[in-house]
Length: 444
Ligand SMILES: Cc1ncc(COP(=O)(O)O)c(C=O)c1O
Image (cartoon, protein in one colour):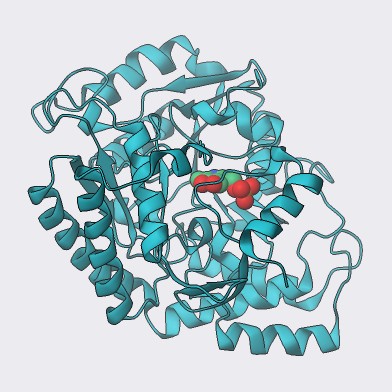
């Protein structure tokens, strides 16, 4: 077997750069729960969950068991034309577990981008209104419709479709209106309604899509009233509310779906990443009339893949049976508290925030001016990697360390990871990091 560096050289020769965001040199060999081993047998604690996918830990034994059984029975049927039983069972389950006391239906795909691509395509057809609204900083995916709905800098390489508008997300640490919450009285929602929506114009606006916590945008948690107020505006103006739960769904925030914190039943929810514990699967659950709006408008040969569907059924059962979301709330509160203690000792950390087990630490060069510490974020995740902890960074300024451990992480690994994190911050502040090594891993 090659070494990590040899593999990376081999990769460089044959795998296109289009596919990667790299933060440090790693080539994964195997994994279990919150641990990952590289091809040289080096052990890491995975506090990324591979971009919030392995909510139930790597290689969850119960999910693997269900998958093995399904593999022996039926590897594939194309749900488009030859529906499989587990796809139908999963659709029934998703309708049950999503909020909303109205008739719902499900669409299946393979990845978060294709789920949000459906939103882009179907909402104007359903409503007869041509435009859609997303938020600055949002990440909905890489396909043309999904990236058009997005407001993340990383997706600006392509111009996207012109029928999408963007509004400011309530990023209180860096309020675009230079206000303080709660004294601001939520000026942002007022601006959204009376400026952005009014001029859209509202009569031509089919849907508003929002991440209940903006994750790639910088782990930004909106004030609690924001989404309920947004929902009210949507209802009043006949606009559908679409919630993107691709990254924060399936227990991560302390509820099964993050939108449940707002007590709102959106018209449509998109989901993917953790829903099949690492197997490719996405879904959109929406009002029946929306999901029936156009026949064969968005289908893929391997949508509702039976193996992924079985993994998803097992994932849902485990989360609900073991109340994994409640554990996420408890452990997440503890990590947040510890991160705040670390912040108090280190000026580099300007803000710490999150909900459940999606947490962010925003790095700044100086706490008053809040100048983003971008290269420092790259150095910090690199140093954490050298010390045995895997984390990434996100945000408009690439300066927010994202902490999304598996919801099943052991208390022992939480303690070890936090120790490593603090040591990495300390090493960074004391200039003990080899910057040249970091520069080779540009991140995003
Ligand atoms: C909120 C959100 N939506 C959609 C996507 C796109 O998902 P995928 O990368 O599976 O296509 C992402 C990916 O990071 C995401 O965070």
